[in-house]
Amino acid sequence: MKYLIIANWKCNPSSLRQSKQLFSVYKKQMRSCKNINLVVCPPFIFISQLKEKFKNIFLGSQDCFYKEGAFTGEVSSQMIKSFDLNYVIIGHSERRNIFHETDEEINKKIKDVLDYKMNPILCVGENKKQRDDGETFEVIKRQIGEGLNKINRDRIKNIIIAYEPIWAIGTGESAEADKMQEVKIFIKKFINNKYGAKTSQLIKVIYGGSVDSNNICSYLSTSQMDGVLVGGASLKKDEFSKILKKVNSL
Ligand code: PGA
Image 1 (cartoon, rainbow, N blue to C red):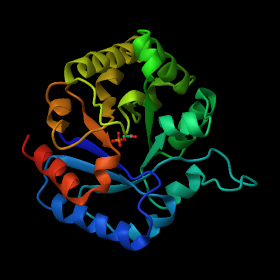
Image 2: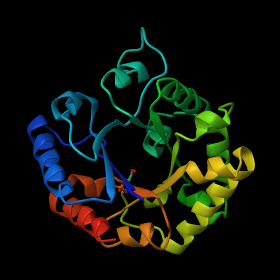
Image 3: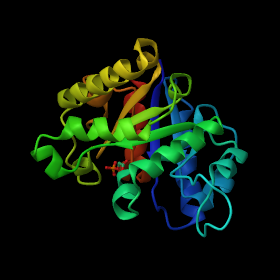
């Protein structure tokens, strides 16, 4: 089995030169990694310059829009597909909170990405207050249920679910690995009840939130996650190389 590592660069780095440098470090490190599929999600403007075939490294998009036409600033799923990208992050908490994306819009994006035969990475997770109020599972259930609304079983298997508790994103406060295993089991059960055991086995569940070289192995071993989504640490050359090395040693 190969671990799925998603590097989400968000709105970084500042220049094409820096993004090329970072990407070349990834390529060097990935030469010796046998058990990783790495998906790099840079800002749209850098994608064409990083696009070259490289074993086990794929490019992905941080978002998409489900229509074309008079929508200033947007990039459609069809455009993303025309660039041969196969992965699209959808519903990241920064999109939900800063750009006020709703579950309904997220559902439309997922359907559109599936129509173009790409893999949506649906991000879900509770904020600190919801965690403190014991609403974690309720939030996850709602976000997955609404995100996947009216998507049938055959299409659902290409979806990756990223559990990203908001309180752990960019805070350095990473979640406890054994608790994350409980969440993974909950997500799998939810999919199992809705779509059956076969589909539940096929769907990948990954973790995101302050992943670094010290905690990565616990998410992949103890939590039994199928992979991780790395934000901040994916921009640090040495740290990200260490992350890849650690995963390769599993
Ligand atoms: P982080 O970001 O690794 O910087 O916490 C993760 C994410 O936003 O997906």
